[in-house]
Length: 218
Image (cartoon, one colour):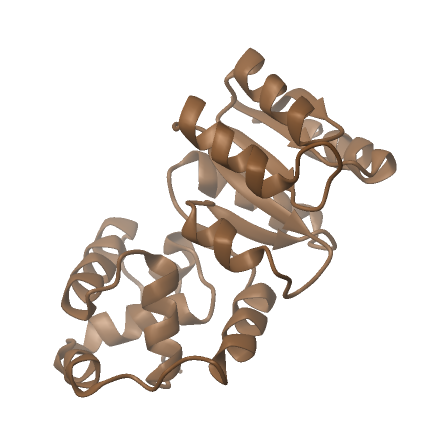
């Protein structure tokens, strides 16, 4: 059973999310909070596997709450929820270790899948969020230097395929299904690609893939 804490200051949304997640056979909503402070307290009290965390909240915002959660309960996977496809919190949240970033209007299946993926230690980004993020950043990102371009060119065909899928916002499970390989193999190819590219995390790898024009193979 996956233990979850839900933190959002919009009571109707929070209660609806609790009901949707709680209806899944493998998910238990252990606690909830109406602001960042209550969210941190709930996480410390219940020690869940996953916390779904809004960013714009009173008392303590989501980034501040996430920082405390990462310090006090580093095993907890944080999925960031937002109403916006791109906002000021997205890069800091991903940089600080968010396991996922989803829009609040994501379908029930997407939300439940995100919880399961995060609980398994994987990262997930809504394809819509990933594309909006990369499109928004595109004009502000420096063009990749020769060393990065050479590194992309040096990737194996499968590494390029995997990176193209990651750039499109796919999880490891989705990459594996798309490319007809095991998740272990998909993770291995991604790890090798990240090492060659000097990418510190999945998001950096996706940005490099975006700059290089990589897409999932047809």
